[in-house]
Amino acid sequence: MPYDMVDRDKIKELVRYFYGNVLKDELLAPVFIKSLGDNLEGGKWIEHLYTLDSFWVLIMTGKRGYGGDPFPPHAFLGGLTPEMFTRWLELFHEAVYKIFVPEIADKFYKKADVLAEQFMENLGFNDDEDDD
Image (cartoon, rainbow, N blue to C red; front, top):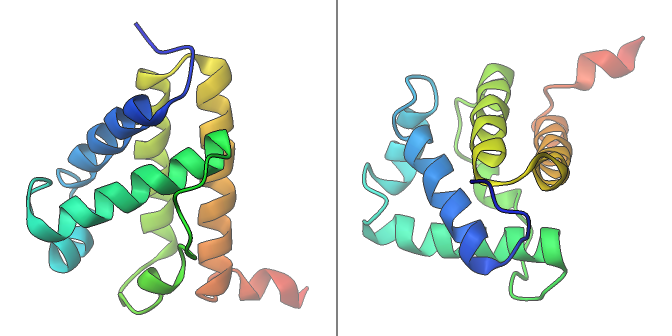
């Protein structure tokens, strides 16, 4: 049964479920595996997942713990495409609506959508829309 409240443990469950699916995805897995490895239990993933937990706790509850900017670590990955962001959002949507009730899932998804849009803008994927 989906959760009707948000706390660190539930966010932790969401993050691991979501990235477990990301690592199985044909489009996204290669990017994550190249940077972090193919096992969520592995070294680089442990730190990354903890950071993601803290990020989402801050975004969804306001509780401090994350003190960075999520974009810079992604800026130099190379090979990112708008299709990857679309797929990331699809998988996130699936995960968040599995873990949380719709009212909470909607809030998570709206934040993720804004984040993806900001990343795409920062990477220059939306520049052509501004030329109208």
